Amino acid sequence: MSEIKWEKSISDVNSEILVNLEKPHKMFYVALGTAVTCLLIAVGMVAYHTSVGLGVWTGFAPPNYWLVDITNFVFWVGIGHAGTLISAILFLFRAQWRNTVNRSAEAMTIFAVICAAVFPLIHMGRMYLGAYWAVPLPNTNNLWVNFRSPLFWDVCAISTYFTTSLLFWYLGLIPDLGSIRDRVTGVKKVVYGLLSFGWRGTARQWHHYETGYGFLAALATPLVLSVHSIVSWDFAMSIQPGWHTTIFPPYFVAGAILSGCAMVYTLLLPIRWMFGLEKFIRDDHLEACIKLTLLTSTIVFYAYGVEFFVAWYSGNPYEWAIFEKRAVGPYAFYFWTMVFCNCIFPLVWWSKSMRYNKTVSYVVCVLINVGMWFERYNIILSSLIEDFLPGSWGHAEPGLWEIGLTIGSFGLFNTFFLLFCKYFPIVSLSEIKLIMPKPLSGHGKGGH
Amino acid sequence: MSQRPGILALFKHLDTVCHTVEKVKGRQDFKDHEVFSPTSYHEIEHACGYAPSPVRWFTFVGAMTGTFTGFALPLLCDWDWPVVVGGKTAGIYSLPAYVVLGFEFTILFGAIATVLGVLVMCRLPNPKVTILDKRLTDDMFGIWVPNAALDGPQAKFLKESGAAEVKATH
Image (cartoon, rainbow over all chains, first blue to last red; front, side, top):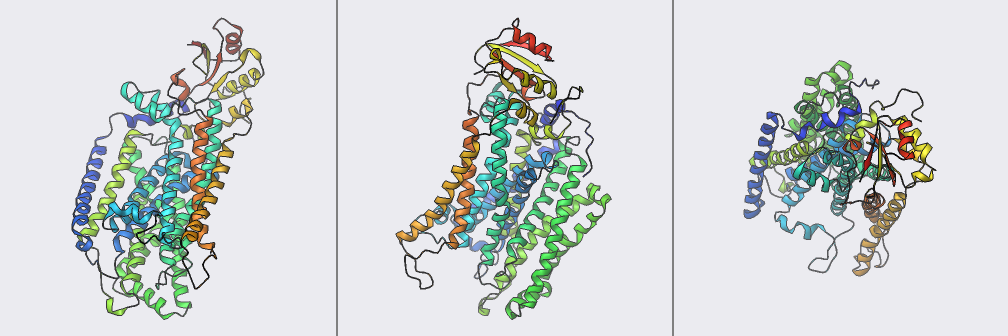
């Protein structure tokens, strides 16, 4: 990325970024209304199937239990990964463009993990008993949970991921909430005062804050790689053909970052327009995000190829049968949608003008999100639906309930994200000041 | 600390405030002064000459406690109710599967301890906070000196050093 020529100085940051606290664009209400409607429909559906049972779902019969619930779970956990990658790994690498998008990407992570966590609970049927099944408590036979189970590892990984991401996000928000407190009056001042914990901005506070932020980034960095690796073990630790493969952890992590970066772009482009933040979230910053998306897309492309090669080269007829069915069987549509959306369409970004073309980039990012959803659907469906007992083989397509819950999860995510955009700084005030020109007197002796 | 009366000098420029901080650092009449910055400029940190932050010890102790807990939890449960796996004698514990828990608890406890460390060292939450000037969290730098007056030598020195404004705080 070339050197940015800033038209703004640090004096413009607070006044121009915090416009979101004032009356928003009318499109904001349209978006929020749509999101809340989707959410309410899903809440109604969940309430209904919790009371009557999971049998209302289409194709819910052995061995096809995991289908759309776990597809959505893996999809949303994956979306979250880009937030942590941008906030932690790119912080350690001192990639300056991350300072403009990290706050909203971190918020995206937290809301995506909430959406993900909802699905295993829904999947348990009686979600109010979820804690009893997931937490290490002895059961009625006085047995402890199975600590060797990847499903239990997943509970630990997701809980740790959510907590660490939340702490990281909030620690970064404290100074910015202090800035808001100093600009507003009345009840808002009290609320933001409480939320900012009484931050004063002394050099000593910044010193401890910077140290803590660096350590949190260092702790969150292995999480980016570990969480989706552990999610992939939910599949890879089984002996199911199509799942039992060592390529899954890196393949899942690359896919997660691909979908997450595409989602960052999908969210930020309309938000940037809605709140007039073009002078801060610059085209060059978004282009850097596109480059990261392109990189992960090529890794995913490679992984798809290697997965097929290994299935063939292993000489295992059951493994190869699954892969053959994925490509030319009854679910080939899902497979080819996945390949085109995740691997072929992003190739347009090798052209610089396409990376800067917002319409093309936006469409490709949305398609990547569709493709990544189909990737998880494809992996879960093809291996589950035809397992070791041919007598239980069947055919499944997502029905009204599955589609409704998926749309509902987007409603939940967007409701949270839009509320965040209204009440919190969309761009990190303190961090964007660091990448802007330093306020020097021009006498030539500043800096280090 | 800033509850006491004193004076606050506001600076527009990073280099000016850094040079001033370096000059007042050892002076007795600037004892207990505080420096304010709108963001975490490393130049100010260097000028103030702080020792490494003790937050790192919070992180270390938290993370090590997490590692210990992460391994202890499944091992103690194994000890409480041995589950025979692969025909191995009960009491022989298999650690590799518990590495995942050890790792996750290390990160979890380390992260919580780090945030607690930042809050403790920054003296937060601070419900009795006094806002000396709203511009300090916006775009201005500040040096606050306790037990000083507007007509005193400290105010004169700060003005000469390039302060944009010097005002009294109560």
